[in-house]
Length: 409
Image (cartoon, rainbow, N blue to C red; front, side):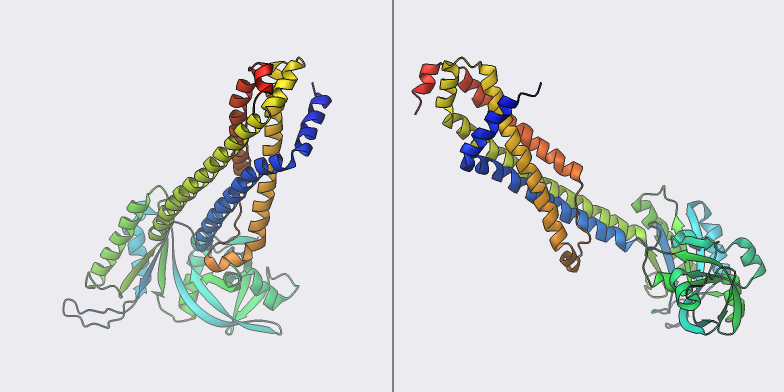
């Protein structure tokens, strides 16, 4: 049961020995404060890395064409490499088992208008799978589908900010938008975690974009996602195989780095994971070092406190106090101080992260923070360490004879 006299005695002891109590708590507060800041910064770096890939699927591969920089098989340098629909189909058929989603892109910059509102936007002709490559979230309506592709329908999926710019407070779904003189029915409105630029895009069926704005079968880019069951090394090797195969198909020198380029997210993800692993190990070691320093500090202080209270223990024993009650009061006092100090360290650490969080973005640390469960676990570790550190000398002191304790200097 709750013993109010016991706790009154503990609080009296703390109030009468303020310096001792402050010194006991300072070690714990500082350890938890430093622990919170370190892990908060580590989480901020992780958030930065995650945000870099938030706009696209993490297993994306982008195939881009350019101009040859080296002569090859009698063909001069400077030759323009142009992807076509047949190249898109070739990649899909040749590597089908390793591809999850796939889409080509055709880029256009067009004037869009609705009634009296007009603005210029980036327009992309894409396949239906592009929704999953770009992580597009449909807010209203639907995305492009295979029927749109087959029939070359004049439909458009517009970003949330395009709707806001052109339609003002009027819903865009089902209305017609004019793109450089051609009317398109808005069949969907989307949002994108990539930010404002991504929400000012307009998507058209690629077959429609090719026919209306060029009357050709050219594609500017081929995008795909590899099988998510692949590990990073397998995904990197897969991207290299596609590049090698396309170079052979277009008679490009194998060492030419400009004609056909592959941007494989597996390379970046692998580097980020390795960096996170190393960073995690460093932070863990520093954090553990901080906790160990806190444990050593609280242990030394507890030994000193018990030594200082030897005469008090002798008086208690002379008055008939049981060794168990003496140990309990010392342990409860230690646990109370450590708990309060640990919570204070947590509050200070979170406060510091909140205070300096925005300024850390200049150092690529975004939204630094730490889970309370982690810090609470660290605090409990210190509490247990403090209790153990106080238990051993307290138990030893509680069993000495009163006369010996009273003679202690």
